[in-house]
Length: 158
Image (tube, rainbow, N blue to C red; front, side, top):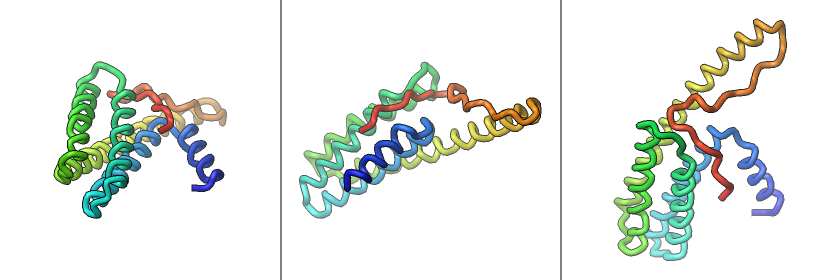
């Protein structure tokens, strides 16, 4: 990657909406899980190990970012921990079932997170429209991200 493209990517991560940042992490995680499978298929230890390391780092960041003591937050923590306990086994066993299961979990979490984003957007669009009509054209308020059941803190750039 060129230096300019890398800087652009870093800026995108640092300025991303916190909700979209979680989606970006899920996307990169899924991509790297597929690379782990490719590394296993190609008997490429370096490719498998590097992609697996990135996946573990992303899952760890997602785990650290979970906030709150709700049932949803506890579920996310438990699932992330379970994935983190299973993934290192792949380096020893080349067990693609672990990777495939992790891909399914992350895809489902990504889908659920998209629903959270859609719900928040609906709430915020209604609030913005009400505010806009009640203030005679004043700009809409900023989005409040604290309403979701399991809140996230912005993870540090990977």
